[in-house]
Image 1 (spheres, one colour):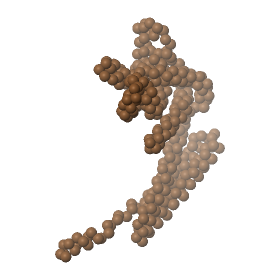
Image 2 (cartoon, one colour):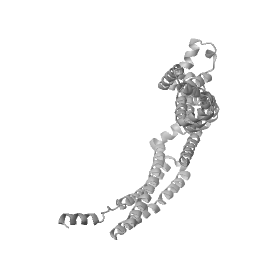
Image 3 (tube, helix red, strand yellow):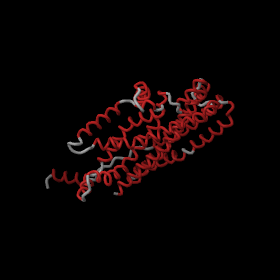
Image 4 (cartoon, one colour):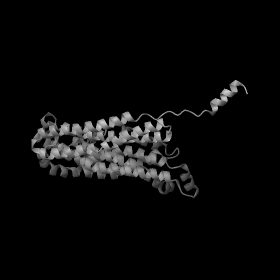
Length: 367
């Protein structure tokens, strides 16, 4: 055996050197420091808030004590991270590679958990500080209890107009959007004019802001004295404008869902003797509809928020009603009520969308 072959054989038989895991002790120490600093900032914020709100000391101080106690509970994972980091270093020194990597991973996980919750607590403290700054000017401007109490009932009543517009528009949008989607994918040379018209409509209405469509329809149709349409109320002008606008978006959602169905489904249905129309109705659309429910709900969440735009044509919705109170009291707390109402109806739907998406993902993995 030559010297070169012997050296190459020795190199091949040497075990590969493994690099040590990233040091976790600095991150663990940062987590402990962050927990202690956050608890201290909580106490400082409580003192500042009690001075700014002398009448609410009985509420501020106990609340701050609860938050500080909750923050201090984060010391447990932070200290556990320090312990795991030291264990990882000792295990690596003793050549226990697997134990070292496992301990280092646990240390990083505990440290990041403590840091994440500290960040959440700091965000809460920042919100409290923001409300108390400038002698509570922000709190009085946006969260004045007296103005909220005065305006709440009438704003809730006017919010019914927003809900009516949203519900009726959603029904019309589903029908109009599906019609546009089917025209957009009309097959053959005979369907080319429909495809051209649908594409032009969809591109055009998606390019124009909804508020401009509402303005043009709400003021343009009465000025043009269009028969029947010019006699509609502002509420129905708003419904018509939102239907025309969101129909373009929903059409693309439907089209994407239809095109996501495998071509083999259509081929199998046609081989069984179903017509193109029957195939679309009984085979493709039922499957596509299940797939597009989450994105449709997202569009409808946006639609509900855009109902506030109808105030530009004089519809007395919740936002318009809140602006009346705001101008009378020189305070924006009534507008905060409107924001809260939209939050109440929007967040549950957003969570429903997340749940539907997760269920669809599980169904796809099961398939």
